Image (cartoon, rainbow, N blue to C red):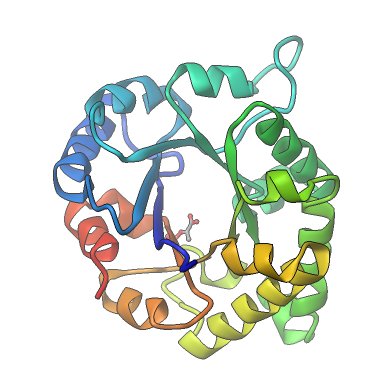
Length: 251
Ligand code: PEP
């Protein structure tokens, strides 16, 4: 079965509630009801409620930008899977490189968050990616394999088909530098082979792998032509309704 293209917007720590709501309404009016692709937006936690209202009745998927693995309790600053669901989220970004590099999230912590989300019926987008230093040291595949194997630890085949992988080279995020189509395809093919080792070939062939890192209207079309690129996780360009619409409507 062909993999359905998936375009996801990560709004990071941007937009006050009313700005988020406006952007969500624009996106819902132009990017909804496209049955041949999935569209997701991940606003900051504070805007989730307003954005859920703004996209009501559309098929835009609402996502959190992180999630705790526990149901409730003494976890100051965290949001539980049940809280995300309560706000209308059915998906969550996990292991974004900003969480890993700025907030010290380890592969083990990422795995806890991911398994916690799955246990509560929230579909994770697992982000992986190498730094520039790691690429220059020729250890990209090693780094990615570790992030994937630990990140997916204890995730069985039944749960794995709810997961989307996002390959986001750290050196390409918010820098304006995009991996070339060939560089991205090479890594995506590697990740799919790895999924086939961890799971079965059929399952690996059905899991969507998104590319992220300075995706823009100008480069989305050629990225989407690559056989193992199934969509994009978009940061900066997802904050502009026209740019995001053009990315969603890639050719
Ligand atoms: C991201 O935040 O996941 C991202 C890829 O950002 P940008 O598109 O701005 O590089």
